[in-house]
Length: 298
Image (cartoon, rainbow, N blue to C red):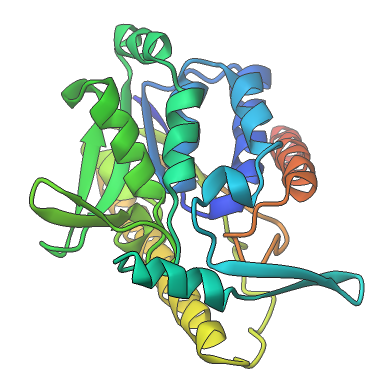
């Protein structure tokens, strides 16, 4: 069984889309299993349907308003670049509404339902391919995997949304008596789960460089410190997922093909800039083509 695994990474998902486009359209890879965490969960349904151009159109046109119903960030253009800070007024308003998070992402939920239609959902079910979404159950301190075979349209769209909710900057969802958040808080790269479900050949797209090329800038305020801490924790989770995946693969006779980002794309993956994401999609496509071309010459 062949599996496509896509890690979390927010706006960097555009790069993963470019890689997947090359694998599916140019290399004609046919996967039986698709697993996604966070931004990966947004991609896998349309990739399984081979509706690459449709999901590319989404990733190369979104902005902050497409994702956030209450955005916790303030973005300023300064010295030819972007300066990102917390929007204290929006955060205060959110807390006064009774929210537990700095921002809310209900616009993303609406976008998911608009992008994945009921007819497309039924077409996915008929393909008899397993589409799996990773979510974090904070109440029970465990990772959960939600398969398309177990849910109807409304529930599955909500699980995709939950998988993308990077708390405390996005919505914390209470469902079935538990609080749920971004799947990346527990499993950034669900390689082990792919092997457990029977995969013997895995293409894993990792939205991070293989080697750390940068040091984080000193924290300027409490908000900076919080984002730095979360970034650090997610990096460690991702590293452990990959090491565990390699270990399990070596004992199960599975092959893993890794596709890392060759450069640092962004230091804040919750900023959605359609021009950058359009460029990242093309970068992902070009990188996958170059990587496989070099492999064929060896």
